[in-house]
Length: 151
Image (cartoon, rainbow, N blue to C red):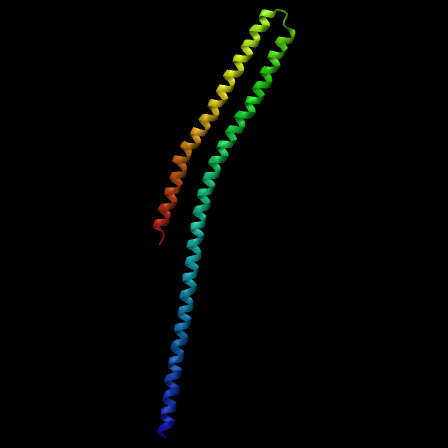
């Protein structure tokens, strides 16, 4: 009789402990899902910040390349027009002194225009460096400050 009572008590205690273990397991799984979702969200935010910074850098590089390419295109058109004009002068001018003067002017024109376009490219690079130091560093600081504020 005592054995039966002890067996019943042991079974009841075992069932209670099993129920508590099951609840604990369910609670732990729920907390683990929440923790994993938090981790995924944090990684997503970090990746988003990295992509924002990369986008800022790419825009700055695109702007530099666009200005440089535009200057090169304008320079080519400018030289083509100048060469055509000076070629027509050389071809149709009757006075040799006038032709020689036109050749000197052509040489000076090409030298000065090359200098001007070189200054445009140099200024473009300097502006890119300035933009890099101002805008990109500002974006990096903004991203870092967001990271520090994140829980």
